[in-house]
Image 1 (cartoon, rainbow, N blue to C red):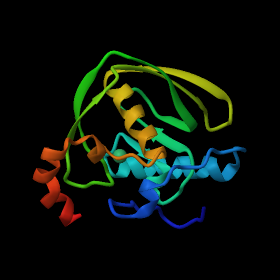
Image 2: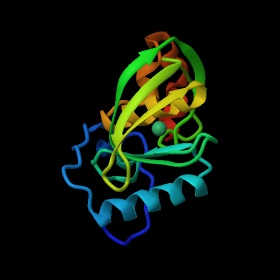
Image 3: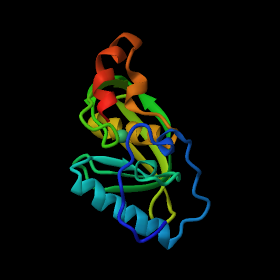
Image 4: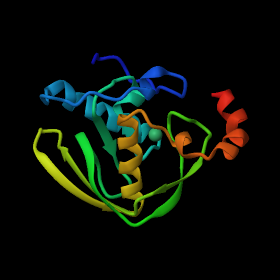
Length: 161
Ligand code: ZN
């Protein structure tokens, strides 16, 4: 983790497909990185960002879907309920929008930026964003939800990336 400015990684860069490492000890570097990621997310008009998207294979996400900023370490979904389908975009797949079926409500366990365990209950858009960002930590992207026949249709768009 350096002082360099963050750069977004896009489809095709291997870090996006790697499962991230859990953070075993929260350090000031992690806190600094989470703040940088939040700034980067706001500057990019995003509502969530996961560390692999800026080239760091660690289990860190930032989320702000209009309910305030969450900076989370080692987040996991421990409970899911209901279903919703929203059209999602991703900073790592510019210009692509995919409808993704996800749970409507989730419970997320994580550490906050101070390393304190937290439990967050989220629904609707916020629940969707948590699921999207936690997918990134496992190397999963929204295009993985596209059925085969539809993949063909967005292939050309993806090629441009
Ligand atoms: Zn994304």
